[in-house]
Amino acid sequence: MEFHIPLDTGRIDIGAVEGQLQSLDPAAIADFDHLSRTLRVSATLDEAQIAASLARAGHPVDATSVERQASVCCGGCGG
Image 1 (cartoon, rainbow, N blue to C red):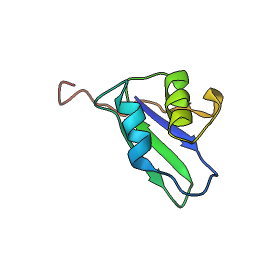
Image 2: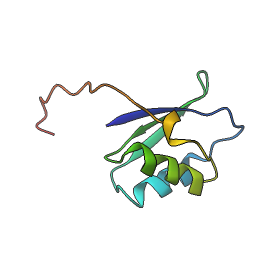
Image 3: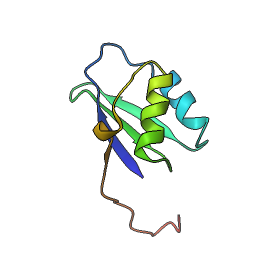
């Protein structure tokens, strides 16, 4: 699942964020869009788990700001 999280904080430590996410989902990935100030997360976690991971990485957010995105998976790869 993909999630978008608006972050208005200064510098984002993507390595720390991914480390915390991957402690719960080893396949989780994250990147940060500097123009929109949006953290994008792909993981099999729920909003509360993502918010808790971000807090542990030094970027506390409320779980309600973690926005689940509609699936764009076509199923073609079998995944």
